[in-house]
Length: 250
Image (tube, rainbow, N blue to C red):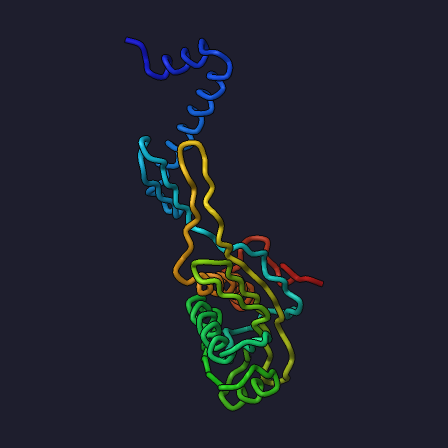
């Protein structure tokens, strides 16, 4: 009995040239589709539906596009203990409605991610009800007995929901309360784009947006920007090759 794959190969070889090209293309696309189907249950955020009588629909989760954080200012020595820190809401620099409430919501998400990273012995969050001011934040830190104050700016904010592009840019600053010295200054931005469907011969690829793209962007940025602080305070958690000059912009 002949093997189906050999029959397909034989048919591709003996058919006229235009048909051979089309058949080879079809077989290649079938192979790609089979690979996608095999990955459908993997943790890659990919799912496949359909059959050969109807075009297959391939759904791929959209991802956050960003560069590593740019570190402009950083300390030169490691602290001898995990410091107590106070987190104050970031200031939105754009002219937009509900700046305080949006800034507070984004700041709380950053704070929650940093709590899970456990860089500090204490990381208190306080809603000042006012736009971020380094001088006021440092004074509040002294009242609360904090050693460090974390604040900064939301320099760009665009919420396209699940129907459009979303992007966020952050600038984080960390001050020493006792001296008012700026210890850390870093910035990072990210975007999540809504992409149109891509049609292929036997299947269609669609990007699947999350219900709240901005939250995913903010938490991704918070995780990226929190890691240098974790590595600064906890040398035992530093990856191989990391140093205090890692990622410095100038």
